[in-house]
Structures are given as structure tokens and as C-alpha cells.
Amino acid sequence: MTTYYVLAEKRINSNTAEHGYGDYPERVTYVLTKVEADTLRKAQGAARRQYKYLCFSGICANRIYTEIEMAKYHPSLLATA
Image (cartoon, rainbow, N blue to C red):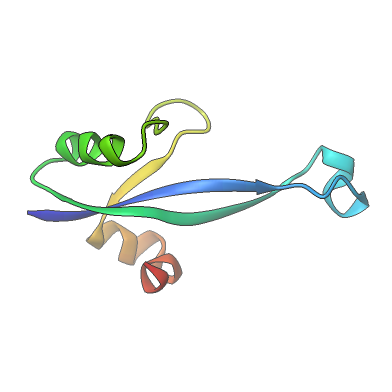
């Protein structure tokens, strides 16, 4: 079994000059859930059972990484998971 991490993105927009009056929201990436599964598709299915709104395709999609990929691409998020 492999550990998979689902990353989500949240947009912060105060509608002030700091965020371009809504044109440039601040994007914060965080670990939504941690799932153990045999394959990537099974991990996506397990994550969807926890959160019905998850989408893994498209422009603003959630991302899913293995523990090795998390250590390589997002080590700061791995420490908070």
C-alpha cells in the first residue's frame, strides 16, 4: 500500500488593493487528506468517498501525490500533513 496526499487550493481575496481589487487572489495550497491505496485510481476513489466535490482533472483541479513526490515537490506541506 502506498500513501497518497491530496492537495487542494484555497483562494484568499480581500477585494482590496493588495489583491488587485479581486483580480489577483492569493492562492494557498494545503493538504486536504491522506489516503492509503494500491494504485492512483483507487486513491482517487477513496478520496472522493471522503469529499464528494473532488475533481482530479481540469485547470483548477485537486492534485494527488505519493509520499516520495511530496518530499520532492512540496516538502513544507509534507511536514504539516
